[in-house]
Image 1: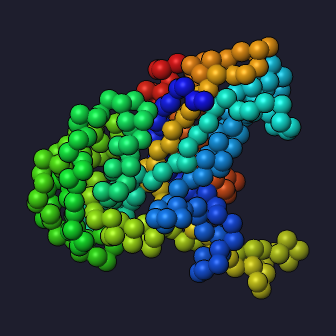
Image 2 (image 1 turned 180 degrees about the horizontal axis):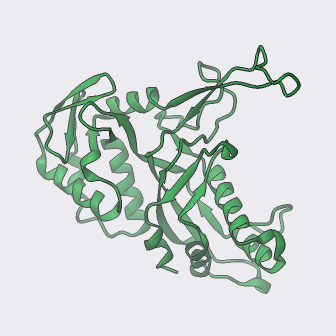
Length: 297
């Protein structure tokens, strides 16, 4: 049972490919998405593997057996089933998605469903916003309209035009307070709240699709069947996940859930790579609340 919980925010610094395997549609190598909503995500197993690999390199586990054993005692052994991992991670859920804007370089879009789900996760981890978030059940944005915190009357997102929704300004102000309190380093004036339908349409259609080519190592030219397409979550995407700590069952190496979370807090770096294509610079993410995380050690 997990006794310690901590919500962690990450921002994509470079396009991120958390792959879902071979695709059956237009894209050969699609990203992971939630089955019920089609919203992009990073599976917990992919995320945990990336963090474990990051710590293995950062702490020089290869050359220090004591440090390596300590890391494996937290994250689980590399081979075998000696004991369960003491740290767990949820899927990384998308909170803000960057989209090309006619009034700015880009906007960060979200929707009622995403905000309400985020609030529920915040309540589960710290319980500090229950009073502030009571009004969120009244959030509503009509299709083709938007709410923002900059006061613009119209938005052009990709090729779609959205008109301002001036209703429920108290609800909008409440969302602004929570975003500013919880998301440090994000320009609140870029955030745009859309209807659930419009949001799902945009996050489904406007990820990055890159065509790559396979080169024949013998000839140095492209193979005839070497073209393939790969999908990426764009840079500036903001996601969050929950880190979970549990007590150990090993009497010889007893650790409490608090000690497990202290280990994560004190060792995780501000920047690490997640997903595939690491050798071509993809998947760099930044912990937006890194200072807050490390100060909790």
